[in-house]
Length: 114
Image 1 (spheres, rainbow, N blue to C red):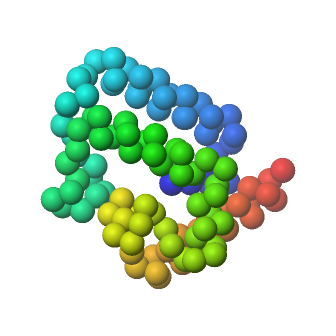
Image 2: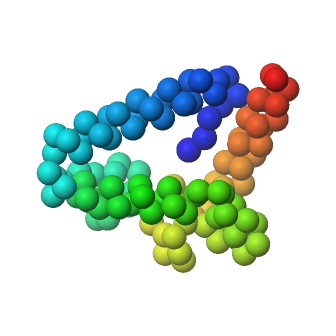
Protein backbone atom coordinates (compact mmCIF):
# COMPACT_ATOMS: atom_id res chain seq x y z
CA UNK A 1 0.00 0.00 0.00
CA UNK A 2 3.03 2.30 -0.03
CA UNK A 3 6.61 2.66 -1.16
CA UNK A 4 9.55 2.83 1.23
CA UNK A 5 12.24 5.51 1.14
CA UNK A 6 14.70 2.90 -0.19
CA UNK A 7 12.54 2.20 -3.23
CA UNK A 8 13.44 4.55 -6.06
CA UNK A 9 10.94 6.13 -8.39
CA UNK A 10 12.36 3.93 -11.16
CA UNK A 11 11.78 0.81 -9.03
CA UNK A 12 8.18 1.79 -8.25
CA UNK A 13 7.41 2.63 -11.89
CA UNK A 14 8.99 -0.65 -13.04
CA UNK A 15 6.98 -2.59 -10.46
CA UNK A 16 3.81 -0.90 -11.66
CA UNK A 17 4.64 -1.73 -15.29
CA UNK A 18 5.33 -5.38 -14.39
CA UNK A 19 2.02 -5.58 -12.48
CA UNK A 20 0.30 -4.00 -15.48
CA UNK A 21 1.86 -6.56 -17.85
CA UNK A 22 0.87 -9.39 -15.50
CA UNK A 23 -2.71 -8.08 -15.36
CA UNK A 24 -2.84 -7.85 -19.16
CA UNK A 25 -1.53 -11.42 -19.49
CA UNK A 26 -4.07 -12.64 -16.93
CA UNK A 27 -6.93 -10.97 -18.78
CA UNK A 28 -5.71 -12.45 -22.06
CA UNK A 29 -5.41 -15.96 -20.59
CA UNK A 30 -8.50 -16.30 -18.41
CA UNK A 31 -12.24 -15.80 -18.86
CA UNK A 32 -13.82 -13.07 -16.72
CA UNK A 33 -15.80 -15.74 -14.84
CA UNK A 34 -12.59 -17.24 -13.39
CA UNK A 35 -12.85 -17.45 -9.59
CA UNK A 36 -10.14 -16.28 -7.24
CA UNK A 37 -9.58 -15.20 -3.65
CA UNK A 38 -8.17 -12.06 -2.02
CA UNK A 39 -6.33 -13.43 1.05
CA UNK A 40 -6.59 -10.25 3.14
CA UNK A 41 -10.35 -9.83 2.66
CA UNK A 42 -12.66 -11.23 5.37
CA UNK A 43 -13.55 -14.92 5.22
CA UNK A 44 -16.82 -15.45 3.38
CA UNK A 45 -16.28 -12.32 1.27
CA UNK A 46 -12.79 -13.01 -0.10
CA UNK A 47 -13.90 -14.98 -3.16
CA UNK A 48 -14.47 -13.06 -6.37
CA UNK A 49 -14.41 -13.41 -10.13
CA UNK A 50 -11.80 -11.88 -12.39
CA UNK A 51 -14.56 -9.58 -13.64
CA UNK A 52 -15.20 -8.35 -10.08
CA UNK A 53 -11.46 -7.81 -9.57
CA UNK A 54 -11.18 -5.75 -12.77
CA UNK A 55 -14.16 -3.60 -11.85
CA UNK A 56 -12.75 -3.18 -8.35
CA UNK A 57 -9.36 -2.01 -9.64
CA UNK A 58 -11.04 0.45 -12.00
CA UNK A 59 -13.18 1.75 -9.12
CA UNK A 60 -10.21 2.03 -6.74
CA UNK A 61 -8.12 3.80 -9.36
CA UNK A 62 -10.97 6.21 -9.97
CA UNK A 63 -11.34 6.90 -6.24
CA UNK A 64 -7.62 7.47 -5.71
CA UNK A 65 -6.99 9.55 -8.81
CA UNK A 66 -6.00 13.01 -7.72
CA UNK A 67 -6.02 11.85 -4.12
CA UNK A 68 -9.39 13.46 -3.53
CA UNK A 69 -10.12 10.68 -1.07
CA UNK A 70 -7.30 11.96 1.16
CA UNK A 71 -9.08 15.29 1.46
CA UNK A 72 -12.34 13.53 2.29
CA UNK A 73 -10.59 11.40 4.91
CA UNK A 74 -9.10 14.52 6.49
CA UNK A 75 -12.50 16.23 6.52
CA UNK A 76 -14.73 13.48 7.87
CA UNK A 77 -12.43 10.66 8.98
CA UNK A 78 -14.11 8.23 6.58
CA UNK A 79 -12.09 5.69 4.61
CA UNK A 80 -12.83 3.07 2.00
CA UNK A 81 -15.96 2.79 -0.05
CA UNK A 82 -18.38 3.40 2.79
CA UNK A 83 -19.32 2.65 6.37
CA UNK A 84 -19.13 -1.13 5.85
CA UNK A 85 -16.02 -1.15 3.63
CA UNK A 86 -14.70 -4.68 3.88
CA UNK A 87 -11.73 -4.09 1.59
CA UNK A 88 -9.79 -2.11 4.18
CA UNK A 89 -6.99 -4.01 5.95
CA UNK A 90 -8.31 -2.98 9.39
CA UNK A 91 -11.04 -0.96 11.07
CA UNK A 92 -8.93 -0.50 14.21
CA UNK A 93 -8.05 3.21 14.72
CA UNK A 94 -4.76 2.24 16.40
CA UNK A 95 -3.76 0.19 13.35
CA UNK A 96 -4.43 3.15 11.06
CA UNK A 97 -2.51 5.53 13.33
CA UNK A 98 0.48 3.18 13.28
CA UNK A 99 0.18 2.83 9.50
CA UNK A 100 0.01 6.61 9.04
CA UNK A 101 3.09 7.05 11.24
CA UNK A 102 5.01 4.52 9.09
CA UNK A 103 4.01 6.42 5.96
CA UNK A 104 5.07 9.74 7.50
CA UNK A 105 8.46 8.30 8.52
CA UNK A 106 9.02 6.87 5.03
CA UNK A 107 8.06 10.18 3.39
CA UNK A 108 10.36 12.18 5.65
CA UNK A 109 13.22 9.72 5.07
CA UNK A 110 12.69 9.87 1.31
CA UNK A 111 12.71 13.66 1.49
CA UNK A 112 16.09 13.64 3.24
CA UNK A 113 17.58 11.41 0.52
CA UNK A 114 17.02 13.93 -2.27
